[in-house]
Image (cartoon, rainbow, N blue to C red; front, side, top):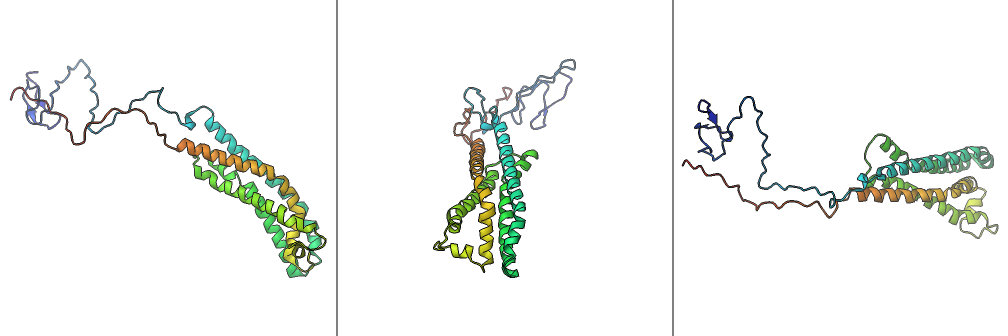
Length: 267
């Protein structure tokens, strides 16, 4: 080592061949390893403010996505919601197309503006409900197939659509349908629905007559879909919520404390 020129690895100053510490910054001098021996690995330096996390498998909590079967359950739930929604929408669409000829026949007795208004109400409301039912899970399914992670907000819009469809169908069953069974026209909506000159009333009448029997039979399936969507949202939210109990950490040094420097015995 007498013929080697040493330099401090911290400040770069030249050192004496037999120096154990740098006289300028106090850094410990590490002698170079022989050519035939690989250098020993040093432990990484830890700054004073570093918190060392200790992993304890017995105490560290496991999130829902890391437990066996949870991610598969979310994927299965998305497939179920999408499949049920598509099947219900297909059944409703077939019923709508099958009723077009009968609806056109009933609207033919009206004047053209009233007939067009009734047909527009019947077609637009029917197709809007069919679209809402069919799209309950298609967005979630596309997200799943694209490999993007689910967030709690991903299930909010499908749940809101399912709830809207359920409310509309239930309102038609509870408020509009009884008016068609009132021959005395004492129901508040009976005159509007059964009037001979109201195209809007005729459109609502066609909805309740042809579409509502099919849609009302889908209410249990739609309610199950809404419940499943809310359950998936709660599961994903619980998975992403930070746990209160964290893994144990080693105590950190006091703020502002500096590591002691070694003293050069040659001084």
